[in-house]
Image 1 (cartoon, one colour):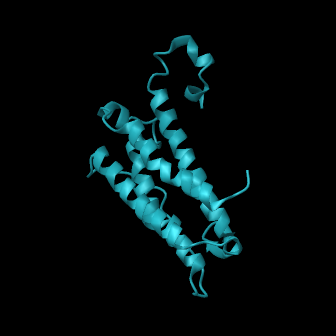
Image 2 (image 1 turned 180 degrees about the vertical axis):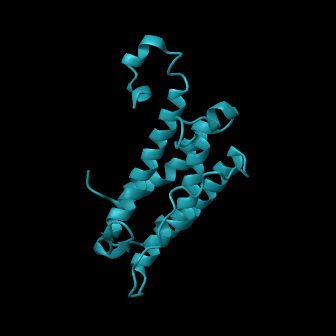
Length: 173
């Protein structure tokens, strides 16, 4: 599939609703369970989405599109959300939805033209990346964490499914 801004916005716009459908109204066992030491619960994943909305995707896009000579990105703390449990899951879901809506408006208002997708910034680990790569990574990042939430939740029943573990690969990853 070839990269298209409109298709990018489709996925990015759906993610908060998908996450809400998956998690809203569930009890704490589903929300706070993880896969073991040094893994994330669905609650942690939503916090990670929020942190990314505040400090990653759009701020980096704006650096790339700016007139500044220095195009270096601020390093992103992928673990900033861990240990922060001040909000309920419902509050986190709402904050994620609001931040994503605001960020999608910024993305749409940027009125990106195809030639702008080759504009570059400097990632602290990867070096030079272009705007298309950043936006495509944002989409794949969303899908990756949707899959992560599903996997973490499925693994809560790994023992309960007995022999079906042979056919249900999600619990074996």
